[in-house]
Length: 197
Image 1: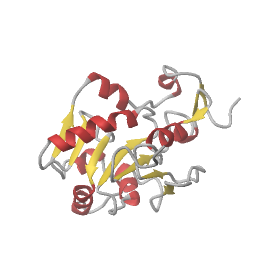
Image 2: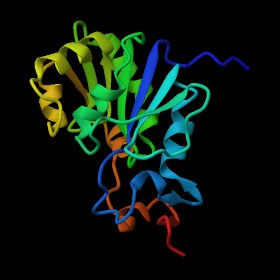
Image 3: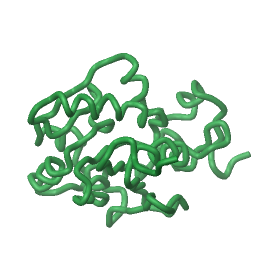
């Protein structure tokens, strides 16, 4: 079995650094049918990417092989600060996903095809969702450089700095869906919050 990634040159960034106020616990540590959300995300991305970066203010214990953990300093700077902390320009493609969207990795093949079709596009994203996106890393680096400050910036502002190609489709929107509360996440299975019986 080959260990080559299915999307050559891909670095996948999983944003897991939010304060999780609606979830009531660290989203990355919430378990769905016995598995942490961060482990579900990393497990889905490892076959696709040459490197997976998990952005979190606390150590989650997922760093191994082609997986690393990073944090913006100081923590809780928002998604754009997290993306900037994880940027690795040795990879030509950078996927940006969130830990509370456990099926988002399934959208990446369609985003890669969309990026190939959209001549000159710097980023392809699921329509309406700037945090389920596949960037050309050079375009992402330029977009980050155009922002005076990366902390507390909305992801849409970063997206607006590049030629963006949205991809539409009910299936893609379902794959990209994020779950902000235990009640929402229960639609997918049994939910356990960390530190609670």
